[in-house]
Image (cartoon, rainbow, N blue to C red; front, top):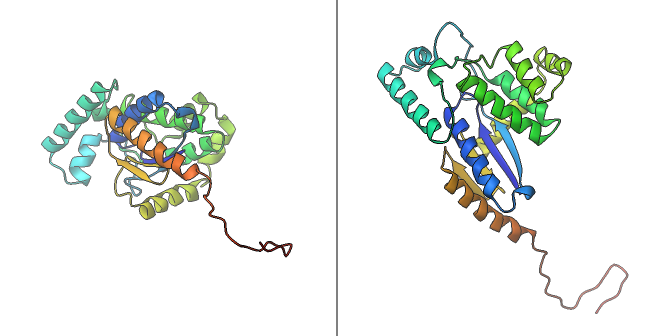
Length: 235
């Protein structure tokens, strides 16, 4: 059963949702028959990385959000993260463009889904826990090497526009699928889950989707009657 998940490294609720989804998948009876693919979704494709300001200052200035509102949102995110075992130092996160992080994830997918999942986790942690710049080549190289990518292939990627097309394709597919925000989970193209849902909700969605998946696997039922075959035999 295939599951596509649209997310952005810059989305705190995507990190929380991944934690809960991973817990649900670990409990799912048929987890070994599930193929998970993380799809690129850039929340702010035109964002120019700026290490001189905080995310709070960026949201207050560029998104015209009152400082108090941003602080309340941060407090909510930190509490939600704490409840699922994540240290969310969102106030220390850097306003960084995520396109190169998405391209690096596609490179990891060209190796294996497992490597891409590990890189996705590492990118979330780097951005929200460690306060690293996810648009910095040295940071991306470090994270890529940690999950098994070679330094040369990472450098070649960052010196080119490799996988930029795939990132755009993911974004277009999201629009065609009806994705308007992330995280957004599509299970077996039949069942969708939006937002940072609790583990129980993801487990329930997995079980429902599995039912659809098994129904679709049933062989075609044929009601036989008089017919002719290609050898000219008619009965």
